[in-house]
Image 1: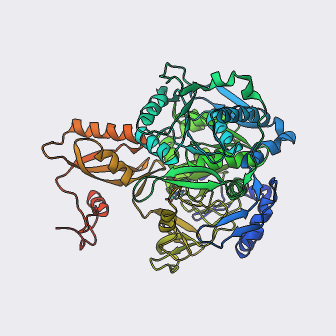
Image 2: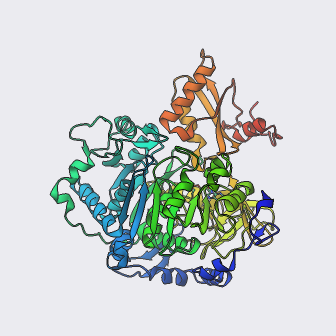
Image 3: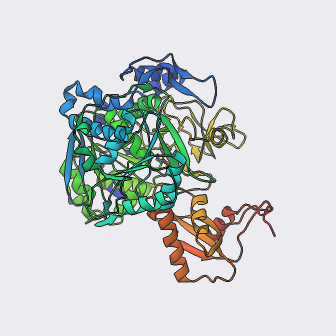
Length: 634
Ligand code: PRX
């Protein structure tokens, strides 16, 4: 592949962006601005914040009087939706496309900022008519259709918070999240299209609601049109509600406090149930807008495509909020990348003239499998920047993406960040010399380090814990209903430092190489799953007494799940039961969590205090040295 490098900007393993890219970049001097942003973050962030509408300005940029409960732009009033939509309606952008959407079957819809506003108003009126108020949390469980975006914005517009549950999750995952958020209103669809089949979202919703007791109303968007069960008095079709004239009346955007909750998003941690990560209006707004503008060098002429799902943080920050805050034109696609053929993405890039593509290494590896011919058949010359997120990108995938998709002329922005960080943390900007596989340098205002277990910086080239040493505007504010866990999980291991949970090393040029999770979080196709959730799904099957789950490397998906299962007395393991257990996990959590392999065992390795030694299972599975076994129970 190296031989194919189509440009001469590579010096050893370092790619130097072409002068034309540097000339048009928003930021032309990283070192100077970075130093300024670290010396005086409050100045840096207040200048960025000035670009937005606030009905009342802040008293303080950063309130650090009660760490780690930091607050940004205290006592200011705004609403992220005002800055995403209302603000643009007073300018020429009123007629600009905000969203171009293509369904899996090829149906296309487009929305200008003006029509986006109309759609959000309708949804906001529907929510109000169901009694949703400021501070309530509305759960959204939808396929990748425009109404998902409208629903999120409608919640924020009226000062309610949203909790989006990824449409690939299933019954137990959905029920647990609704329960924790105590949502009374759920927005869903009759189904969504994936690989030519219908994902039966409404059926999953009915099962989930039967397991918990808070939902009073369900709004159902018609997408696939098949017959679904509608509970009288509880379930309403969205299009029926929209028929009511009152739904089309104007709805003002509610001004809220900068620190009011914008959304919660559940993510997996080391132990227990997924945690609701809390993000707020003001700081998140300033941060997502700024990071997107500087990293992807967003311009009015761009057609920007973040190919993630809005149900994950990448979608929240960089499909919904970041692009709209910048007045950008975004593209969204409903279905699978290789449907009906492996050229689907490349065809759409050509058709819509996409100039920025942001996706995950797993998608790149998945499409790389089909060879170069599918991509080569299409005119991809509109692309000017590429992006990657979710896990480390292996140099082979990086080079394929760079050469075959970017045609050797598009720098790759490898962005390291997390649900908790709200936006990009370690990332190149277009002018940064790139090293394939490294997320390069911290973003402005972000103070990153790699430290040993005592919190001391490790020498260049050595592996350690990735930490962040200063608060930043889009940082999570807490874990919903569990502030202690917020403190213990992120701020207790190292004094005054945010612990990311990743291992990393810094090279002699200060480039950061993220290696992977240090905890029991497994990244499968870039999706974040906790061993605890999958184990508890397995144990909820009546044949299973105990289970341990590990992630093992996989060529395309990064990792896959392997489960070790101890059956109840009198039950014998066989292939049929293994299949049944896989199906059970798929039904409870979602297809992404299905174990690749199930091994029936008579005993699980545990420490004397009863903790499963997953590390040992992993070493054995990989044929690696088993390491320290002194704590192993006999
Ligand atoms: O391990 C890191 C990995 O993804 C984790 C965060 O997962 P999640 O909260 O689901 O957010 C993913 C999308 C922002 C991190 O702790 N990760 C994310 N981006 C990268 C990465 N690892 C290496 N390189 C990246 N660019």
